[in-house]
Length: 154
View 1: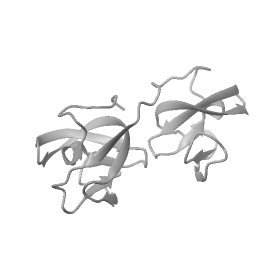
View 2: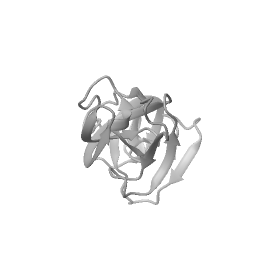
View 3: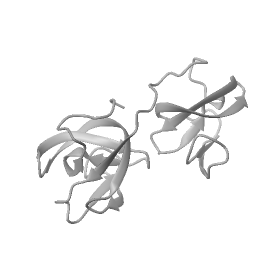
View 4: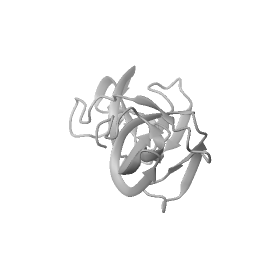
């Protein structure tokens, strides 16, 4: 099963997972209608790796969505982040670093988890937002318009 950068086979392919391997999904969107072993569906599940997977090819125990519909938010790296905001493979600076986004740049987030407490220009928070690129970003360094979560829990 291959992930895609968007909800359809016309989007570039990402990682391929072998049969019977787990995929962590956080939310779903509607996209290209796909026929698989579990029927014909237009539901595409967003994995925590930032790729979309055709629900018709995933065993979720249901022919209906089992995660909430994606309510993606575009947020901005705060201007005080002179070195940018780095994504991480988990909700802490101790996880491997990924891409760094410059101050003022946009990041699209899908959900949040609780992790390491990080101090930013507006206080200390333990919220880490999962970007649609599959990396976690410290909410303390993102302008979201709120000091609390702006997306559902992962």
